[in-house]
Image (cartoon, rainbow, N blue to C red; front, side, top):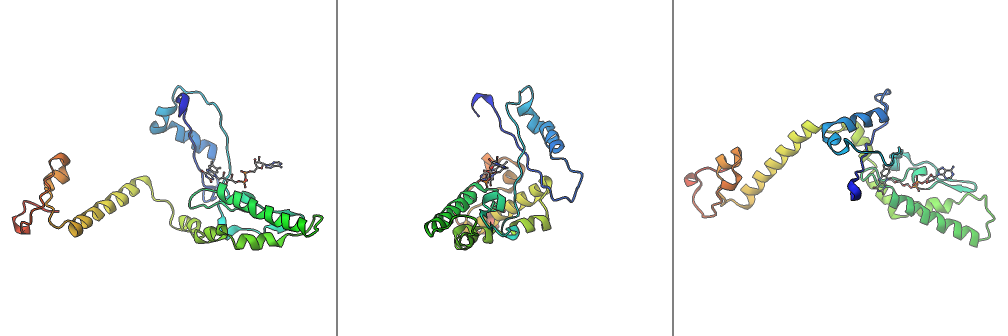
Length: 206
Ligand SMILES: Cc1cc2nc3c(=O)[nH]c(=O)nc-3n(C[C@H](O)[C@H](O)[C@H](O)COP(=O)(O)OP(=O)(O)OC[C@H]3O[C@@H](n4cnc5c(N)ncnc54)[C@H](O)[C@@H]3O)c2cc1C
């Protein structure tokens, strides 16, 4: 960022599987990791804070109306957890609420009514569909857990490598790759031979 500044943040899931977890302590540990520390060492804190993310989404939406009041945005839990974005959803509930209040005032309401039209508008909006579509993201994360960094390397790398091999064999059957170069890292030496030599005559193929 400008002025040689950095932003750093950490999201701690308060799932309570570990009731002793301390978000502050976790963040301190995170800052001491060599990969983070190298950016922070010798620096000065300009500002800091802690926030809560209401991530229950569709499955946790409460009744959003009561006499004289409406629940909007993160107070209701409209954040899209799959994107960790709730600004657009909060704004949308604000727009829908404004419409419901405006209509009530136009119809002579003097307040204290329960504006159930807000719920109807919400359920007919793109926001409701958006939250419905991602309703299983949070439960899936909890059920299957996160992929650890080292295993994700194993999963992602091998999957991409396998995908690459499939694409090459499917889409470029005439391409001849030198296994020694590919496997042992001399990428600049990779031979790409697009002549239609039979498989048996190729030096090696992956
Ligand atoms: C670290 C973090 C990163 C995020 N990143 C993104 C992102 O990149 N994109 C995105 O779309 N969303 C992001 N979100 C989510 C997004 O910030 C929220 O979903 C959104 O701000 C919710 O809007 P809101 O108006 O419902 O609530 P808020 O933005 O929380 O607004 C509520 C306001 O009410 C005030 N308030 C509370 N109590 C009182 C009181 N008694 N009297 C008067 N005022 C009061 C609070 O001070 C606050 O200003 C992020 C959230 C966090 C925590």
